[in-house]
Image (cartoon, rainbow, N blue to C red):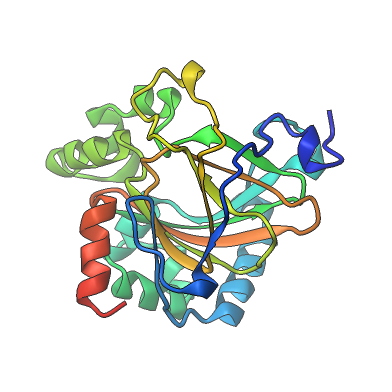
Length: 252
């Protein structure tokens, strides 16, 4: 079923809470930390369009509905692509000096760099960022060593980090629509996924650039008017609080 309004979505918003906006001042709590960093939006847009112009780089996620109006596309470099670059192995990251600068700026042991483009009617249901069951099942030491040219120690460390999913993420919106990111009132990460739910008390935020606690259950509903393009640095080895401290220590 195609959505023709937000209310038609299977993931409609139910929260009655006021949206907290970065425009009114820095947001700093257990779910989100907003900060200013002078990202070069023109460069990020140019690199996105360059990568997205080659279908081999594009992954598509229909989520609820496979129709083109509902889709999300994902381009960029996985954590193993970034690891290869950092270790001096061949990587297309070498073609983009600005991405090399950002890796140096926001480096952690294991990160991924992605752009997510959502159609206006796209919606994320309640979730937290975790490796899928399919991903966890295929992460054997021998396969990772063979497929990614890693030592046994590197492979075991990678599997440990990757199996937990993205612990936190720096998100920078390259478009600014009306949709907020929403976090469940209670973190439902440890609930059975069948019990994930929304409530009228859920937290709602507008941000431009923020560190997100991706291990707190959250969701986004498109505003049905604008495409949404986000640049994201996913961090696998540091949690939200440790990364927030790092940003604060740097004056961000």
